[in-house]
Image 1 (cartoon, rainbow, N blue to C red):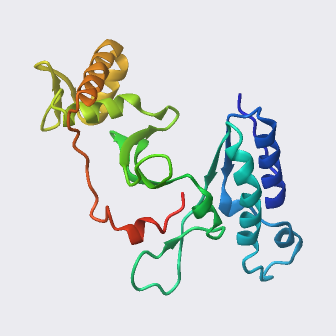
Image 2 (cartoon, helix red, strand yellow):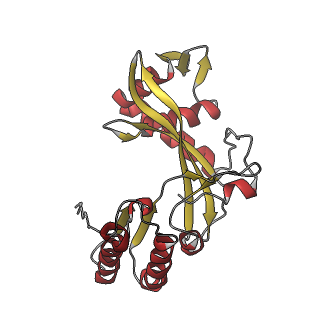
Amino acid sequence: NLIVSQPDTGEQALEITEALVRSGAIDVIVVDSVAALVPKAEIDGEMGDSHVGLQARLMSQALRKLAGVISKSSTVCIFINQLREKVGIMFGNPETTPGGRALKFYASVRLDVRKIETLRNGTDIVGSKTRVKVVKNKVAPPFKEAEFDIIYGGGISREGCILDLAVNMDLVEKSGAWFSYKGQRIGQGRDNTRLFLKANPLIRDELDAKIRSLITAGGAVEADVSEDEGREEDILGLDL
């Protein structure tokens, strides 16, 4: 079940989050977004009033309370944030996130999620290719990277992931725009091949099983590596 709450202030939102975590009745809580958590003083004030550091103090206080409560519960709390750019930065990563530094320190896992490509079917835009970097991880090795398709109205495309891995593992042959499996052409163009796998679950599941078998056996999977991968000073500046 999905429960949607739209509180009036940032304090209200974080109090609701704490209450839900304490209740133990919710498995996953998503706060969307940290940048939109407006302190009550800012809402009650006038346009143009200065409220330096108010949101950062709010987040720091809330996370001190939430950290202990979350650690004793089975609830996963996800904070979505937005990117901003620092003014006058000539060197290093100019990107930063609202809400201060507390969230970066308290988070167990931090993900940098970016759209890298628009997916089209002819002239129609059907989705986007997304890259996720694990920029912090307290429970597993960090700095891993994954790419997947998000199809509008359909969510994350399982078939797109299977196709990419199958090509990388030479289970599916790619020649020009054509994709072939067991010597038979299964589609022209990536999107058409993805739709073929969606329409033929037996072939999709067969490829899925082969991929899992190869990974379990230690088969190598190629990954596209961006130019700035490993530049820790850039990566750690993000908070998504």
